[in-house]
Length: 120
Image 1 (cartoon, one colour):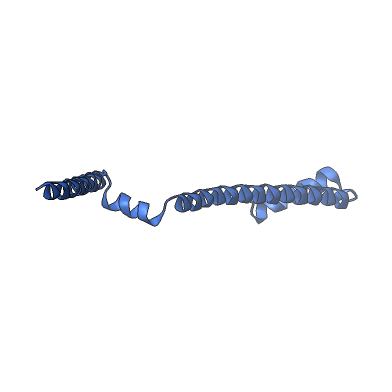
Image 2 (tube, rainbow, N blue to C red; image 1 turned 30 degrees about the horizontal axis):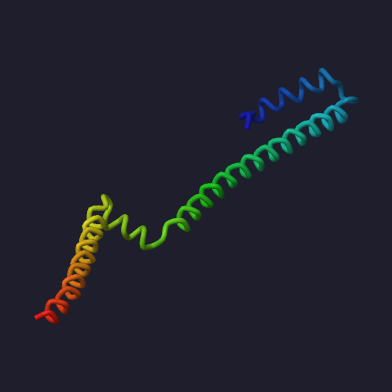
């Protein structure tokens, strides 16, 4: 982590014995180890909270994709793929209107035909 080798550790140990003294060394070591333990716990908590945030962000993306998939039906997707600009759909609606108009004209003509036949 700090890239400390054995020679550096020996220097730190000798300096600690000189500065603190051999009597106080066990208490200082316990204190240092307690601080290291607390720092590791805080780092673990931080890492787990970051993982939770990442997981929630992924879940939000997945939820959005599922909602989008549910809102679009298969027929709408097929229509979008086959007719992206809507020209085929417009042509089909125009043809449907023409067929209905032709049917109405045919029915109108059929109604007027029998009345002409009766009068003759």
